[in-house]
Length: 123
Image 1 (cartoon, helix red, strand yellow):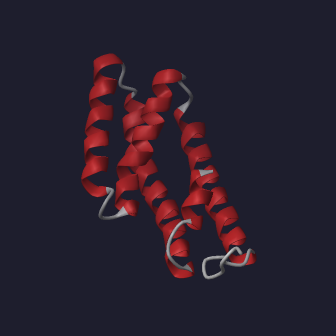
Image 2 (tube, one colour; image 1 turned 45 degrees about the horizontal axis):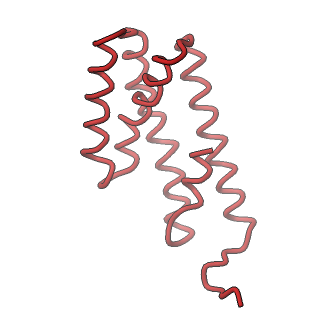
């Protein structure tokens, strides 16, 4: 859902589609960062420290480049999920990729099929 909404936000069509591409590319790269962290499987204090480091890195770059921020947001979200409910790493990574690509595609299709109401007034 977040990938679909990401595509729908932005000032114009080009920037909206670019956000979708950033979301997919950033998630793919973020999964590459997440894979070794999740394979390590930190628990307890180690898991919290990894989450803190990922959160700090996210905050440092999210304002400048969303795709780069996803290098840290993706493993951060997956680590937090693993704290609540542990899941096998392979399917978790695969599902995250599939859901992100699907969401971005759905958002792009909606964006291209539904007329932009930005210039119209609702009187």
